[in-house]
Length: 333
Image (cartoon, rainbow, N blue to C red; front, top):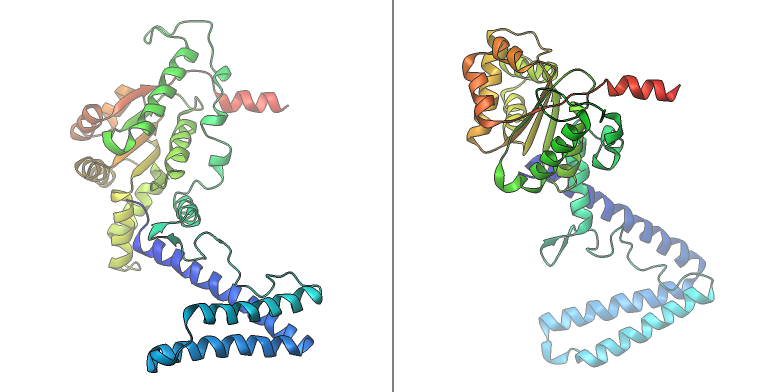
């Protein structure tokens, strides 16, 4: 999906402002040095007149224009005089050259009609800003994943694995999810007790995808249903605003719904949750859900068609272990 049209326009506007700022810096330098070194202004005017006359002759009297070699030699001589004056007065040779924040694309965002690395970085930054995850992902990602928080001393009966063996298995599923994200259109649901690392794993996946320019939207279930309710009932929001919000939820490359089950459950939330899940499945858009609810609780809390959609189309990943947040708090004291 990448950037929306609005996001792209915002980035292109930043490039416009960047070029304008740099041009103003160079113009201020010229003004300062023209006053300080009058001879420099004479040489610059000669360069401008030479280029202007050559362009005019090209258009009006092509036979009378300077041949290309002569033109280049004359211009090169003037530029050399200009540089000599600059260095003689203690300025770098390129002090009056155009300034570019990115010299590779000259602040256009493109090199040979292909996106420059700076444009890609702008894109990633924009996607981060719209994901609701800008700060937390610096701390919570696969590089900071720590298996030592999970017990490895006893087998969990219904998994036939230790908590550590299980979380390593789940981590591998997450890595595989990222690796095949653009072709597999998988969906995940993490379930288990509070504090066992479900949200952490969603953050790990989100960072990997954001860093490869995918659109990721992270919302708690409370926030998700607040947005859906506003889109349905808030008269202060224009239809354009409502459509934009719904489009981003339903069309983003990845939607993460955290803490499903903490919302007030009623017919509205159930119908909206089904619509959200079903639309994204139909459009091959991946979704990750995390919940403290058990498998049986999910069946009881939500309608049969929601439960059926989840169990049929999501990889169910149970996470067990001690409360990691409690362990971290104890370690810090």
